[in-house]
Length: 116
Image 1: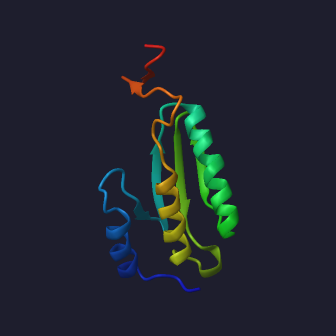
Image 2: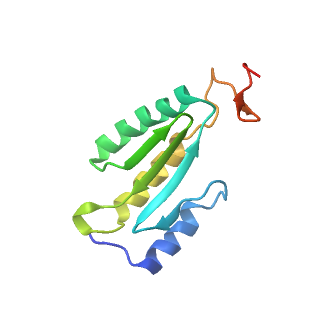
C-alpha cells in the first residue's frame, strides 16, 4: 500500500463527492467530513455501524462525537498519508449515512421536532 499524491487525492475527491452534499475534504494530511444527524442516538448508531465496517476492513478512523455530530478523519498510518483504504472507508461511511434514520425526528431550528 502506498500514499496517494495530492493530485491523486484531489481527483478521487471529485468522484467521492459526486453527490455534492456535505463533501469530504483533504486537510492536514487526512480526509475529513462532518456528519450531522437528527439527534445523539442517530449519531451514535452511525458510529456503531461504521465501527463494524472499519473493523472488518482493519482500518480505523480518527473521529469524535458531540451530540448529533460525528467528525471523521481518515489517513493510513502505515504510509503516513492518505491511501486507497481511506477512500474505500469514506465511501462505506457515506453509504451508511442516514441523517434521519427511521424512528428519529429531523431537526427543526436546531431542536428535535418532537420537542419543538
